[in-house]
Image (tube, rainbow, N blue to C red; front, side, top):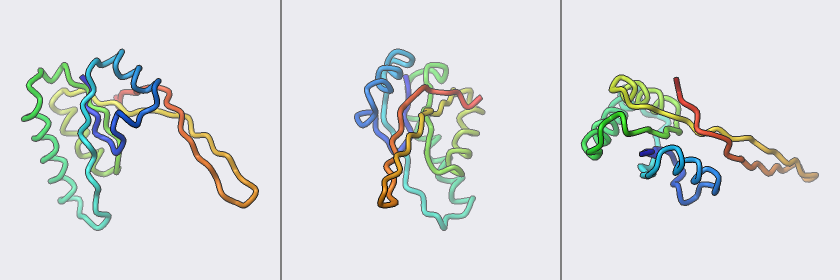
Length: 122
């Protein structure tokens, strides 16, 4: 199972990302990444990470080895949560994409991202 902890619910993923997740992990469950106050202290971030971590452990009846967490978002919370998950032996991945930028004559840009793969954090 893939637990999707990002700002991007799976219903908004491109088809190739959904297929990749389903083929590799089976079921995908969305657990939306919280909005982070940029003025929060690192202690507040760690507390949020701990609360999310505890929630994951309480909600998931499956063995830890059967869960992979897709974790993307504000970097200090990602780092704090990633450490907790990895200490428990829970596999974590990031999604990779190709960034395609189109520069327009009026100075604006259009940026699109094309999903490529899920990559293990380590």
